[in-house]
Image (cartoon, rainbow, N blue to C red; front, side, top):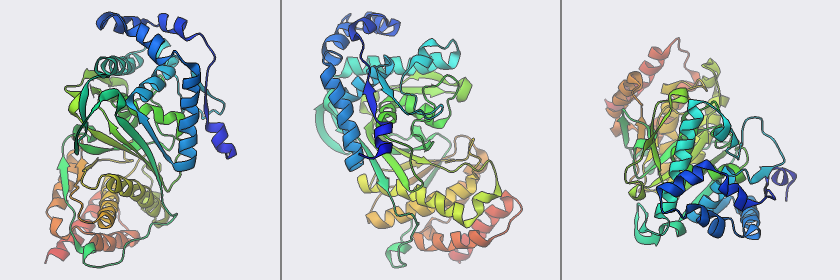
Length: 416
């Protein structure tokens, strides 16, 4: 095992688990709201065998380091989240404010954001407990029915070569891609692969007391993804992570300090994958238009989209303003990058029926740009998009209007 793998590994805390369960107000609350057996369930079914818990941590660490893939039953994920809730997992290495894997900050902080984050965690714990023995459809593209607690979630990493390379021009590269433009959010598209505008430290600052941007929100409403912080180390520029078959246990309103938990409807019949790709921070700088940075963003995005379509070729990818919030990315440039990478990924999967859904989240400028792009769907293909990005490498522009106009003019010329 490499030294960095050893440093990242998590271990079980030696403590009296039964006493910890009895001390938790959240668990007492769930106990009263359900069948008054929840605390006994935790003590007798989940936390009753320390050796089994230790072996679970060892297994996921070994699987990830050896194969870059971990398969966990929903019951195992629930167990890991209970361990995180009780501060029963620790890691020797620190990553600043990232990779917080216990929930003490949320339980102790006296602010509204932490209270709302905890409502998401509590809701997940209760819904899992109430539905664990139900038989339900396993995934959106399968009619197989499986006991809920035994359903499998996969965590998969894709590592690309360190250079983005296009496919050769041929008839397949002329096949157009389908795009949708919506006024909604990534996570509003059911039965899709939802793009997590991730930090390189997957999970971001979900369990801290002050932050709640897009990645943190996704981790809260899809809390099964939280366990990725236990075993997935920082992503490199050529890496992406796909988390499959997760459930949206909660809805929400707001953003950052205005974030508020809302109940999710019929979560058991909703199916999602989550794709974590971390954009490079630019803070609005023009450096993002330079070729090395464009190549880096395309490599990262392609690493993710190719993984998503390879795993489920017909599942739409639901994305939006990737890297355009606090990272300062240009939303029009990032849209073109995502179109190119989607076209490249579709080329490789062959006959994929998936669409790329650009969710503008009420950003009227992006909606208008997206609607303009839709007019050119007959010429939105890998071959033409490759030409477009070469033009954008060299194009010197003064503002967003000039940048958009260059794109629209190029596509218009292809329609003649």
